[in-house]
Image (cartoon, rainbow, N blue to C red):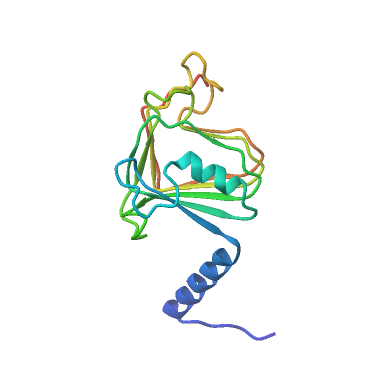
Length: 169
């Protein structure tokens, strides 16, 4: 069996190209913009994109334009793998800039900002999750503060910030 040797740049290019080819083969990419800037976005709300992803088999990627998304309580019940990535400049310019803020303050459904009850894997990247209150009366769960991972899949969180969240446990 032969050995493969790539220089650092060629190896990075090969890995990147392979990752995009694999992700692009079966992944649906859904875009969401903040309430003030939805031009060019496929979905007007994050929950609408999550619901569409649940109806699509395989890996789905939700890309969220930077900005603040108020009164969030997102329910994920998707048996496929799901990635939610924030911080994009816009839906039309998918250049990563910073974070997207998901704010649970004044959510009509008290509890965590993200409540995951699926069997698939969930990856959260470049998000600022704040002001969730799982201790409020009527909360669907007392756990989780910002994120409650109650399903069977793996939860991976990358480059994300949590602040001002409350939970019982």
